[in-house]
Image (tube, rainbow, N blue to C red; front, top):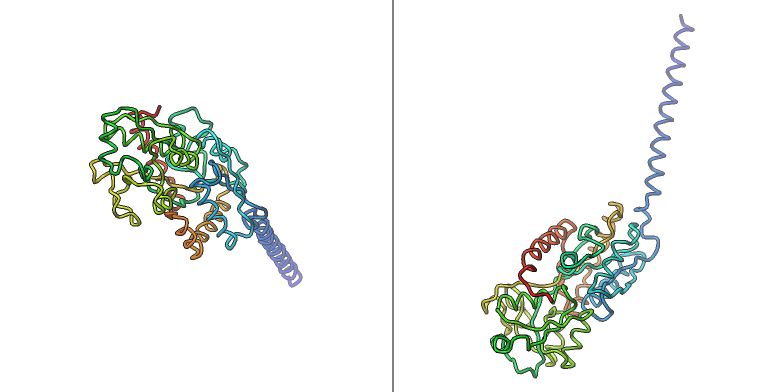
Length: 334
């Protein structure tokens, strides 16, 4: 009997040892897997940031402010890749087709990113990206040269009513954000103007400054310095309230045209990037924009920082699409 008890105890101890060893190996294996997770080592090389417009434009300038500040928060550099063409469609398409490993992200400009698929047969939809965060919200403004014959919005609209299609307004591309803003004003004011598209903000402003067009609808960050130095004049803003830096400029709303319009410049990744990497990208970028030195640089560049979380950005994109589906059927976007 004693021998039997000894054998049973021996077997029990042996089985317990094997079980403990297996558990330890399993936990060790999990730890090893965790250590080799792609998100743990991310990023191990430079991250490309696609900008769908030319260097020197509003989106590009903001991107360079952000990437410069990111040197303090991200171990690898953010490298801007300008891919202008087709009113932004070329760059947006390149972004959605990039390898979904987190090493290619890009700016999506709203409403343009969602307006293009509604007006043409694009090779992407708004659901082909993973929202990371919104970076800037840039209010829309109606601008003429400082020596223009129109000193007020009323004079501008009165002339347009008496001279249909005579006023030329440059924009940043057919169906793009500034085009929609100008067309919406024309619709609400019941005037006919001639829209002149360009490949980006830099070119549309060059056309105005060179007297090739009469006016433009732009974003305030793109023209603020030109207004302050006396080269351009603001006729109105597409904002709920008057711009803080330009309190004498009326809003369209107070003049009887209830139009709010601007450009959200957001960051997104291709569909399919692992959630752990998306979260890490978001956190690094959010930490970057919160740096005091970044906020100072953004202020000096007239950038209106407006953070939105991935979830808030997705909701904003959906609302933009709904608005565009309703309004673009009423607008003359030719």
